[in-house]
Length: 153
Image (cartoon, rainbow, N blue to C red; front, side, top):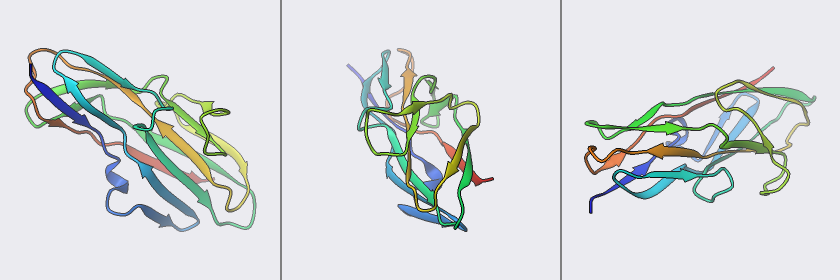
């Protein structure tokens, strides 16, 4: 049996584990990782799985601020030769605490507005996904790019 390893990284956060943009501090805590997947099978990583993408972020302004998050998500992962489709529906959540319970689920394909956040109040975002491979793809490492834009509005 052939195996493929499917991994997706948050490319914009790979260089550093913490990035500071003006008033916003973003820290990548884990990448979305599907691990070893057999060719011709599907795999999913729920947002509650330790293999889901996890980031934390906060602002340093002295007043309460609103955040607008936009995710630019790939439709497929590639190894340079073949593509594997990926879906993020029902796999995205956020919370003011780092816990599995009490999360707010959102549609990752639409902008997310989080209102009236105190300064230095950490927020957490999780993103999982589902992949579907065909029996005709070649083995290898499949990757894609996720871009997360966080604006203070």
